Image 1 (cartoon, rainbow, N blue to C red):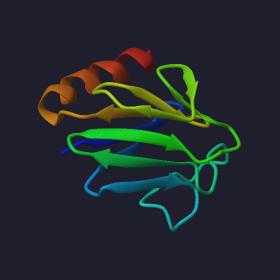
Image 2 (cartoon, rainbow, N blue to C red):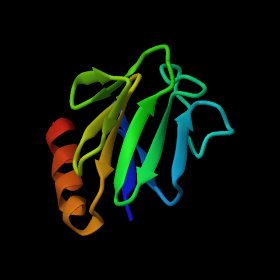
Image 3 (cartoon, rainbow, N blue to C red):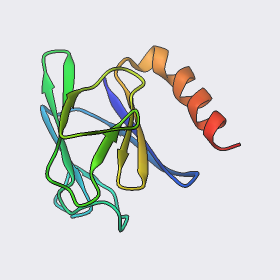
Image 4 (cartoon, helix red, strand yellow):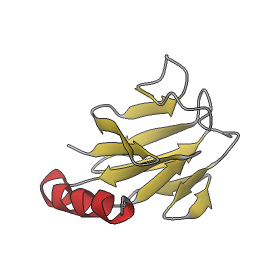
Length: 112
């Protein structure tokens, strides 16, 4: 199952399994993944599952969404993509077995 691992300024904000076909992300409590951070919009973005793939769509958020440092409105996600919702960083783990080591190395490299 695909996962989203969240981190903000070196603080682990948790890992979320992406079980549904539509996963809403934002600061509002009605979202599937709630990110309680002032730089994240109430309804910031949505993840859409299409077969074995996930697509990200920014919902006209105030501070935007970036994938691998590029501002996007929508894009197909790849295993290991780094997503920025405002100031909050997430890593998309599309294949859990392979990604666990990659995610651990990623967080270790940025926390130095």
